[in-house]
Length: 82
Image 1 (cartoon, rainbow, N blue to C red):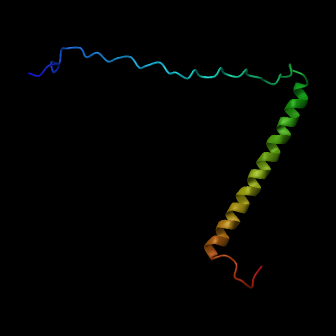
Image 2: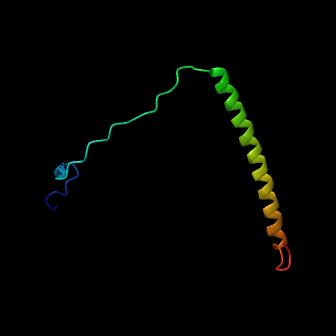
Image 3: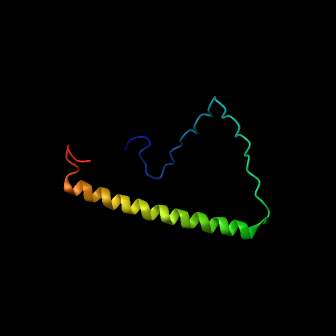
């Protein structure tokens, strides 16, 4: 049997050498201040308005996508068409 081939013998692995380049410190986190429950009714109204506007925009985009897919299936406009 060769030296060090015994399955019961522990193999020592040297620890990794410490890196010579120190890592830079993390920058300080800056966060925006949040309003403290100021105007929750107006916030809800504006949030509802934004929700409705985005829903309408998504509906328009879905219609545009359908029209473009329809045009692509037809082979697109010919050179003389607009």
